Length: 355
Image: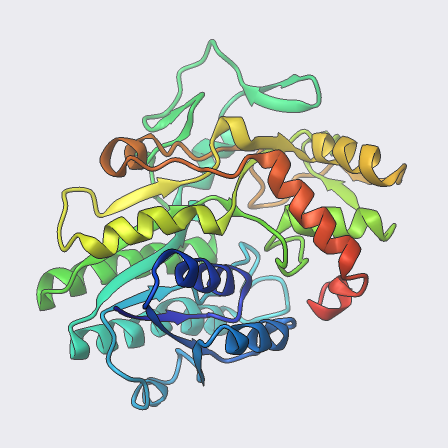
């Protein structure tokens, strides 16, 4: 089997590549990356040592696909993954759309030409911000949880956000480009006869993740805490009670293998996340860091920002029922892995562009 991974030199792409090589003996892996992210060169060296054939190219450029060999499957892990992208002054809204939507069009045209299957690594940020922000939460210890006695919108429960939850705007510019990419991918697959799977992932985390707060909060927090860099609780009273679940990218491999072995199925879109058992608040993460690295002061900024959500956990029960999938790496193991990597790479924040 021949597989192309776009964005292969990022954290998710490089982790999937290494894990696929281990799980699928004999697989031929190709990778495409524009290497614009800090830390990408570090991963490129490691991937070459694993025997991955790398191409320096940009998914925004249709001509960059002309030199790529034909493959059986494309796994799209290329994106600007920040919910603040396009409005944070670091990238323009046009750049965001070019990366996350027009780039998808070029990948789909490549799949059409070579009859290759397409797997999109999508995001929990396709879900509507309004009803998530308006859901009533209460503090339980140092973390928010949904209040029990309330009328929740369809698709939201104590198990998390399900695929039936609303995707109506606002969902952020980032979320809208990923949702539009999902729709285009499904239409291309139906129109031109190649298989398409959409995997909506929650927070992905693990060793080697680029330490930026808006892209990998668990890795950023641990790296910054260990180095005594400034940290802040933002929004919701400034207590750090907001909750996210956590998933290691290598836990996607068993599902990707099943999807690539299946040409069709009734559920093209599934949620993937750590779930309630692999969720924690920033305050709880701080307590974990304090126990491992010692005390550190965290500033408080109580004002809530436009896209902030107090409680976001992915309900992956559909993936469990359809694919017999569930996360394998527990939260504690993920945090330990990140911490060990942070200790072994004292300049990681500088290397990955976060300092």
